[in-house]
Structure formats: structure tokens, C-alpha cells
Length: 452
Image (cartoon, rainbow, N blue to C red):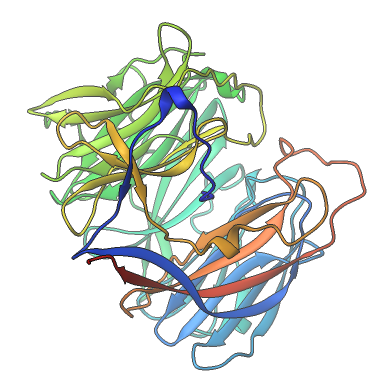
């Protein structure tokens, strides 16, 4: 997650731009907080915060690393806690995915890194105490699963996607849910991509754009070694079934390295990595893909590619005189993180970033050349949430936004806890930090009048 701490290097200093709306500046304040229970702090793994209707659900691993679901009515301050028969290990890939279908039943999957499918569904709508362990959807290609994602299709269909296989040798699978029969079937009769036993694709998306297309970007990776990522690639679809290139050329499934559209042919060890390719959209609704790669001086630089008149044009966002030397297997601690190009309500473009040497924040993005023109002075997270409470060396703050819906203007929920950093998915020797309190915060955005 992004800290508001700013580290400025003189040669890279950009002007600070106050984010103004009607002569007002943006600030975030805590208006409420609620403890849930202490959770494991020995390594990070992502949880889920899901607000829907009048309920709030949180899926997490407790202090003993057991998968747990907390539920409450939004007008109450008491949690109902339910434990599931799943205990996670040291693997930071083992995040939890959770979503609610149109009939109110809750679906959950997680604790999966090249293992058999873990899948639960509630027996009653909006009742997390009725989870039933199913561990099956279709029955095939479910023995080596990773990266579970629930999403919605073009007609609001309930869809589940995951990787079958492993890093360097995996295929992407899509299932669609039948509400009447409460069963899953394949959305695609073939996998979306196929690494041909030599590689696999790491995706961002599909993300529905203002043009009605679902946009998908990915890099190919040859092995578990992160330095073997290469070739930023792209496809789009109206229905998630028929896929095409940016020029409208149909793609035969499964998509392979030889048949895909390559946006930027970044080679292996060229500075591109899975998890840092981000789809966005500019003021005209044109698709953008942000990523990083090494320049001629071997510095790792941020770039954005934009589809302009049927061609991909690439723009360097800023100039960072620093090389990120990454590689090996397991979960890495990212020295660089890039957000999506985002069109704000006032029409301006922004993009978040985080750099181990050059700070974090939000850039103001030039709409023509997509470079950073300055750093916005804005506050979306209250500074108090970014301060580490624990005293154990190496603890860091973990923040998670609400993946559900809460339709109250300028108010949102954030989940907060503290852990040590990732350890490439390997056990670390004791001692371990004490469990950290998991809390949900209610955040309100307020506007300070700056006019004279």
C-alpha cells in the first residue's frame, strides 16, 4: 500500500500541485473505527473487505493463520466470527477472494498456490455462518490452481477465473455461474491463454472500459524466476468469449506468445515484471497500459503505452536514475509500484506511484504526452493510519480498500493491520511479532476552503 511519506531527490523534484476543486483541498479523516480481532503478523497476505446492502463481510487469516469470516450489520458494532477449516502457511500468494452473487449467496476461494481448488459457498444468502466447503466447480483443471478472482461479465454474469498450472507453465481458466442450478460451467471451451508448456501469462484485467470493451494486458514469464518476464501484450473483448487485437483482428483461443498482440517487446531481464502492468483510460477513453522497463543506462523507468489511431505509442512518465535488480522466485517486495492512469471527476489525469528511493504519491499526468508534470498535494488516507503501532522491528502497515458497495458520498471503509514484509514465501525463524489488531476504519473525505 502507498504511504504518504515523501522522499525527494533534488534532480528528480517535480512541482507540488495542490489538488483543487472549487478552491478547496482534499483531506481524509477517520470518523469511526472498529476492532475485529488480532491477526497473524509474521508475513503479509491479502484479505477481503466486502460491504453490500446493510452488511459488511471480512475474510482474513486470524492469529493462528486460520481462515476466518467476520460479519456485521452496518448499524451494529458487534461482529459474528466464523472459522473455516483452512490454515495458511508462509506463502503470500494465498490471498482470499470473496464475492456475492445476485441471489445473495457468498462465494469464497483462497489459500491457493499451485494446489487443488479451495472453494466455499454459503447455504443461505448473506449469512457467512452457513459456508459449505465444496472445493469443486467443474472438476477438471482444478488440481494446480492459483490467483482466484470473482468478476462480472458484460451482462452482469457471475464469473470466476484462475490460473491452472504454475509459474512458467500455466493456462488461464474462466468459469460462469448458473444462478438457477447453482452450478458452474466453462465460459470458454478452451483456456484463454496457453504457455505451451514453456511459459505462462500474468494478467491485469479484464477491465471494462468506457468503450464497452473488456481490456486485458499481460506479460509472459518463462519460469518462476521473476527476471524472465517479457513482452507486454494485449487483447480485448466485448463478451469475454471472442477476443481480438487492438485493430479488431480476431484471436484464436488459446492465445499464445506467437499469436498475441505485443505492445512492447521488452526482453527477459529487461525490467518488466508481473503485478506492475496497469490498465487505465485517458480523457478520451483511450486505453493505456502503465509498466516499467530498463533504459539504455539500465535504469528502471516508468512508461505508459496508449492506443492512438490503432497504434501503440509509448511515453516515459518520468526519469528515475536507479536500477531495480529483481529476480528469483517467491513473493517479492516491490521496490517500484505503479497505479493506473485515472481520469478524475474534474477531467484531469492522475496516476499513483511508489518508489523505494524517490517516494510515493500521486502524479498529475499531462494528457498529451502522459508524463508526470507534478505531484498532487492530496490526502486520501489519514496520516494516522500510516504510523506503525507495533514495536517489533520490520513491521509495516497493510491497508485494503472495500471491494463492495457503500453508496454514501465521500465516505468509504478501509481495512488496516500490520505485518512483517514477505519472505519469498519461505518460513522465517522466530521470534515472530505479536498478532496485530485487524480494524475497519470509516474514512470521510472533507474539503478545506482555500479561497481568500
